[in-house]
Length: 476
Ligand code: HEM
Image 1: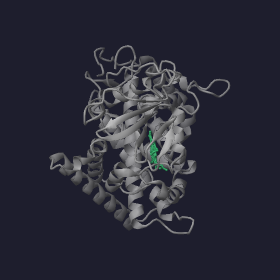
Image 2: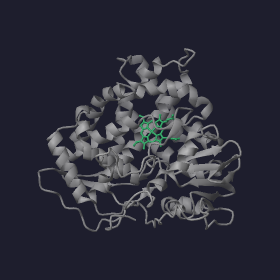
Image 3: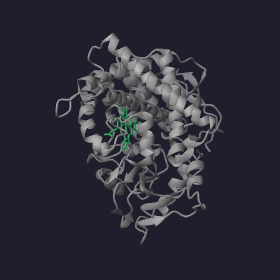
Image 4: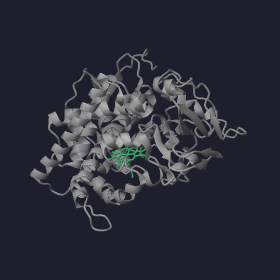
């Protein structure tokens, strides 16, 4: 990141987006390599490559080796794709690979299974359930913050991931996780999230006898075994009925059928996958952005002091943590963890006036859509106040342009859960700690969830005097 306030986690040039440019509805991205197409750019510098696409059109064709793909660059088009999940489905080799790895749960299943699964899982995310999970979130947040020591350097990526995995597992299974299970889950999820992006781009990677492939396979085996062990342990210990697993065990479809053993396993795996890294990336990016925005940081601390006075936040505080909520939303706009979401066209169709042959990959990128300068003033700047509601109740973020949680029938089920957790955690951190970046560059990791590779920060217990940020900290 530069001192000008650019928030791109890679050195990117984001063009002005001339959406009214004649004939620019559908276009082809330049710079395809022979045989490889745009794979080199998507592997080496995905964000700056994608961020540059709106300059060519609203729907931009890219080449993934010999395969054809389309990147959707306008929110209306993205919503159109997401609204038509019979045409643009989670099928094809790419999703088959994700399902083989993570199971056929709600966030990974195709349209045919989605219609049965969604109504069964949805009740577990009603607002009253999220409210019931909030005390568990609070306990886990307090446990992490109580372990911090003044002057120590922590990797914020690790800390936030440990926190959100613990919260995901505590809310799924009221008994929580022992340290060994937590480590196994964390390590295997890490290998999966890194490996799945590479495998989405390079489908034949699995066939090569590489140490990385052996590590990937071993991580998935550990993941599956650990999820089974956790479910078994939970069943043996019994439950008080308040956790997510109890809701899943009680769920019945229209014909009164419960989830099968395999479905239960897959839902649990997918919920930990969908919930943990996304929320931890949001928190890590928020702390990163705040470290470079002293005024916003001061406002966050002031709000935390007024509302919390040094204690850990609770559900009842969330309404009053308005600025904290705006910081979380603005973080999700600039650095959306779910940054590239693919679909496959299951039949020949048309989009933005362009014929889309069956089998084409059509991906939408909240990262691209959220940074359009024709939709957002100072699109690359961290400005939480753009989320402030005016007298008419509207914010400066155009309606329908925020896609961090997706849209349509597959819209994130955990949105309320994630926002509650992120606001509770961020406000509680701000109430007690100031985090100062340790000199170094911050880069996004090229993986399925957009997340900093590492984010070392020094902890300063707040005493009223602001800690100094090293002026030389920069971002690649
Ligand atoms: C800031 C955090 C989060 C972000 C940015 C996020 C983003 C998303 C997005 C973009 C989708 C749509 C995927 C698609 O269209 O294929 C999605 C789906 C989903 N998310 Fe989240 N998510 C977050 C947190 C969570 C949490 C905490 C949970 C659960 C505890 C969760 C559970 C789900 C589920 C179950 C789906 C699948 C919905 C369906 O297919 O019907 N998410 N999420």
